[in-house]
Image (cartoon, rainbow, N blue to C red; front, side, top):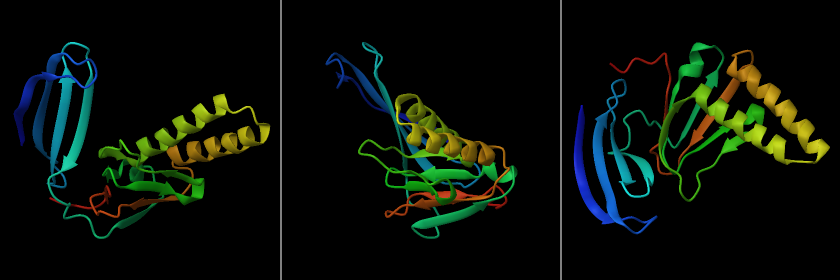
Length: 177
């Protein structure tokens, strides 16, 4: 199911100020979990400003608690879906990495492999910019550990915390049909 509505158009753009700003909302039902999500797409035809936000219509029936924990121990497990709301954090204790929500955090839908790739990109960025040899050694080791996880050569735990209860993990082996 996909339903689109225009909320407003030809409004003042927050970026350039021209009256070419519009916002649309799409109602989407995720096929596997049957959760309904609202996709807000804001854009300006004058300056090409664009922002997309995703909000759940209601807390998912798959949310069992404010803390979701899953052990990843096979290549198939890397396909596990993560629905992280703007209030959720993702932690992998074995790698000593954590993704915290920021002031502009949006809900995102991804899988475990993509979360690992985000952590890898962050480490690579820090590695380029940090002149400290000790910090570089730590980052290089962390990158090796992340690579092992990406290729399912190492077991690890993913912890998804959300005090509001909108975030959840949808394992590949669960059947929600």
